[in-house]
Structure formats: structure tokens, C-alpha cells
Length: 111
Length: 116
Image 1 (cartoon, chains in turn brown, blue):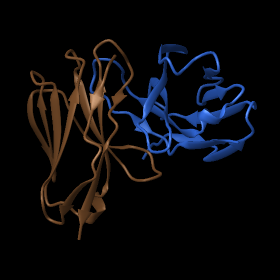
Image 2 (tube, helix red, strand yellow):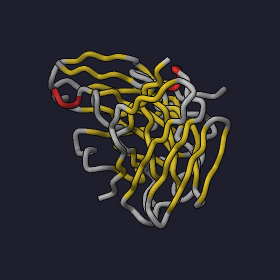
Image 3 (tube, one colour):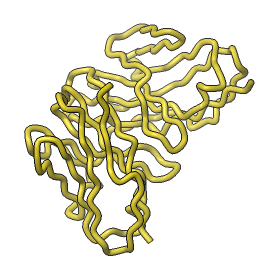
Image 4 (tube, rainbow over the protein chains, first blue to last red):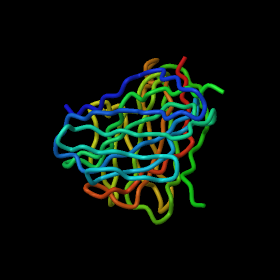
């Protein structure tokens, strides 16, 4: 059973702070890891993906991957109220074409 | 910017009826997917489709469900004999590449199905 786990939250941070979102996955051979943002009632939209161990930065967002620990995280710097959403971690397992999603972490950025 | 389009945005149906949800994937994409999200729950994989056939399906995707690509642009999900628990948001997605390649999923806006 392929599992992707996330803390459901809500995670509350003040505006301007760093928000840290975590995700663990069970399939050790997984290759690609994605962070999506989903506003209430809307479809998921991609923030970024990572497939190599280490950090990957894109603007205010940094994804971190540790395959040995089966752990991927997303840091949001200078959090804004508009970042308030549910953040979904998705994993592309090695033997399937589907993407397995975690339950999401609800982030609330307080003005 | 190319996008995945879905129709209808909201469908209300009576239990036991059949529904067809339609999707137009991005034109140069090769892989198509249906996901569903029951209110307040996680996004769940239903089925992936490549080269005019199902490439993978989940245990949710039983005989009640079918997919079809009737022409060069549309990708449909048919749900036969709907049940109350089929009420969910159904997302169509497409990607340029599939397994083993960090190709993102592009999602449509979703079709909300309400079964009464």
C-alpha cells in the first residue's frame, strides 16, 4: 500500500514568518515529489517538484528531499495571507503512472 | 496558457442514474487521469489512460466506472448506477509524460457530482 502522510494542521503562522510543511512517504523507490496548493473548492495547482536529494528553491518556496528518510518538506518564506490554503504532497511511485496524494496540511497565515 | 477543461462544473443526479463527466486535456499531453476528492478528504487516484487504453486503475475504479476517449480531444468518465457515496469533486488531469519522469499534473477545475 503506497502511503503519503502529512500533518493535517491547521498550521498557523504570522505574516512574514516561515511556514514549514512536512511529508513522509512509504514507497522507498519513489522518484518524483510534488507540492500542490489547493484553495477551498478549487483544483490543486503545482508549486514545485523535486526529484534529487537536497534543496530546491523557487522564489519564496524551498522544497527539501531526503530519500534515505523518505521525507520531503516545503518551506514558505515571508508567508502571506494569500498563502493560506491546503498544501498537498504528491508522490510518483516507481512502478505506477499515478500520483499518490497525501491528505494535505491546512496553512493559515495570520495578518 | 493551455488548460484542462471540464464539464459540467456541477451535476446533481438521482441515485441509480448514470452520469458522464467530460474533460478536454491539454492538446500535446499524452497521459490522462481521473481523480476524485470527497469533501474534506484527500485527492484519490481513480484511473490513468495512455495510448487509448487504461494504464492503471485503483481499487475504487470498479465495474461501475469506465473511461473513454471518443475522439481526439475529449476524455470522459462514466459512472453507472450512481450511489450516494459517489458524491465528490472529480478532477481530470493530464501530463506530458508518465512514470519515472517529473512531469507535473495539470488539473481541470473539477466537476462536482452530487448524488441525491
